[in-house]
Structures are given as structure tokens and as C-alpha cells.
Length: 131
Image 1 (cartoon, rainbow, N blue to C red):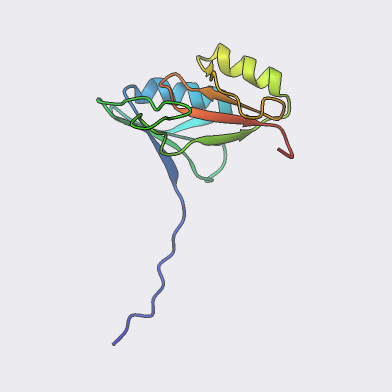
Image 2 (cartoon, rainbow, N blue to C red):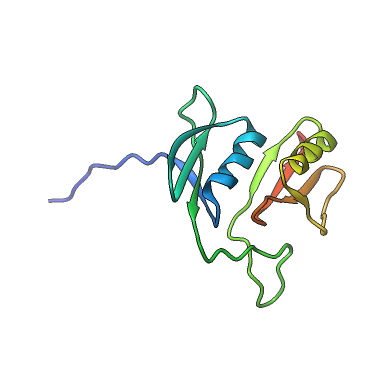
């Protein structure tokens, strides 16, 4: 007999490895104006307030090696990055920097998006609408 039941899948969170789960969760929580949903010593999950939409989780990775942007042969490559929509690119870059992000040296399309590095070196992009 063949099982015809099709399981349901729903994304709960994107998990980011970090040497400091609480610190990185604080950065992203402040940047996105999200709240802590779960906090353990080696794991923190944040998400939008008053919503069950997927959020971000931060998991302890004691041997974390920050990716290189852009990566060259033999260098640590990013496994994923986050794209964040903003309504004012310059103000958003300033806010991210005030929270601890750094602007990446390589900027492929600086008029419509900016590549930044979070406090642990994970690349992320700030985008204007329509970019």
C-alpha cells in the first residue's frame, strides 16, 4: 500500500551560525525591529512582532569563519545572504552602521543596493524598491 499523505512544510526560520548568538540576534532585532521569540544559551530566534511569519535564528558556531565578499578561489564563501528592502538607502546604511554593520568594499550596484557585513561578517544587501 502506498502512503498518499503529503506532509505540510512551512519555513520557520533561517538559521545563521555565529560565535555570539545573543549579540547577532540583538543586531538583527534592532535593525528589523523584531522581537526575541526564543532564547537559549546557544540559540536565539527573532521574528516580527505580533506575527507568526518566519524569522531568523542564531546558533552558536564556536569555529565560525566569516565569509569573504566577494569570495575568490579557496576562500570562505557565503552560503546565503539576506536581502532587506528599505525606503531610504542612505539612511538605512547609516542605521545599520550605527548598530555595528560595515559597508563592504565591493559594491556591484551602489545606486540601487548596498552590500554590508553584519557584526560577524555575514554579507547582506539593502535594496531600494524596484531594484
